[in-house]
Length: 178
Image (cartoon, rainbow, N blue to C red; front, top):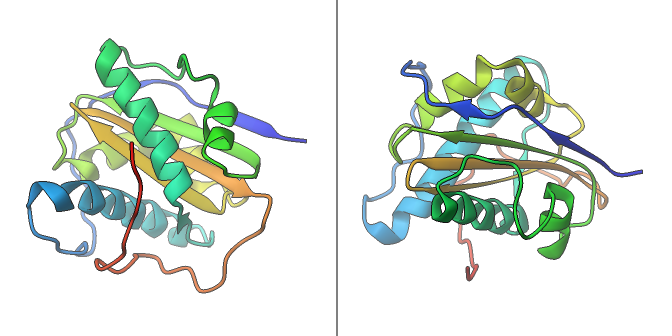
């Protein structure tokens, strides 16, 4: 049985969070997307380690689904879990991800360089925190555009991959066309 978890909508809060250093990438436009995605995953996985949850694996299909949903929210200027492409389960299935359960966090009002602030806000919200710390989730993807944020979490029907790092290397290559 597939279960989809959707959480409450979150509007930006101005708070900070102390974290270990994140992977450093240049600020060139081509690296902003990858830097943002990896930084957010590192923050998620650091929170998961605190509760003895396995780190999530970065997944291109979940990244694409999250980015497409973020693009939709930015286009419609509406913070919503609803999408003309369908509910979360449909959106990640359409990207080829075979899942057992899935969750989504969204936010608005944080700039591209405020991943620690949006993460702190999500951690201060019960429903968002539950998605981040859910020990059944195995994979992660995120999207950002015009201060709209999306996190997609899923439990893969294919299981948990071996040797998942808390923080992926900055040289990771993500190939996708949106």
